[in-house]
Image (cartoon, rainbow, N blue to C red; front, side, top):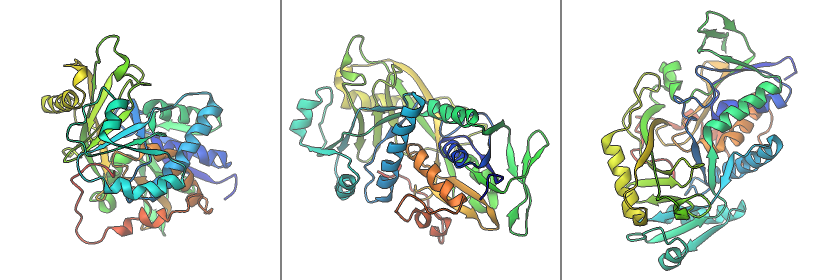
Length: 393
């Protein structure tokens, strides 16, 4: 690769924006394209907050990706003098089986993540605002926190533009594939872009863009997020006092207190019904609100019967096994795709961007785990069956 190399990145979410920014740092000419802008409400990287945690069960390669991402988040946050990561810890409550977390503990220690194992009695003394009835196993990830999702995308794209990157707001579709290469992009204004390589980081739209290849492997699903109002003057449900939490059982819930004063966030981590990210309305359901309120008042009874401050509908971009998808187009050696975040990919944006830079520039990756094989589409053989549970825990 030379300084005259031109790479087009389509999609300014967590994966696309970081890849474009880090390519630019390598001296590459980069064009970044997005249909509605970084952090827009249709995107999988939109919304206010995303959890950054490292406990990943038996999927140990993710621990390395999170460790690398955390270092990059903190480094660039310092360089930009812009707070994007809020450390506050994660309280993980298991109703029954905690074997995924136990399997992960040695790897977490290897990458210097601190996890405390708590008894119900210890947890009850430490977190008096939580009702631990029905909980058998408790862990506290000290290094976890949340990221400002929409703001992060906007900051990364701003730094990309300020550094000399070219940003376009347009719809981009791949042109014809001939002689083993994609021959350009067709833009919605009727113009074309010709680059040396192309990366499509379009999240839930990947199946629509490549219907013959990815339609059966990317499934957008409807997800609801709810923000409830804690009692006036009560700091026990605020950031800095209450940590991020998750309850893992027949259903998996998670929540973030505070959210820069947006309220007490509660969400169900389970793929919802199929969803059109472009055209479907994003109106929260009565059932979803009632389910979130039921969990909230059961697990945090001291919060009372709080009002719903706001709610929003977003989407997961599910892959069948909830793992990411990173691969070359089978007929175009200059066209890459990345997606399948399945509700948990945002936190790894910097490390995934760094990995994609290495692949695009044919350099050795920094990550030691064999994620090229793990995230390859070749892993899907035979009939495709999507997981019915939530994201990887």
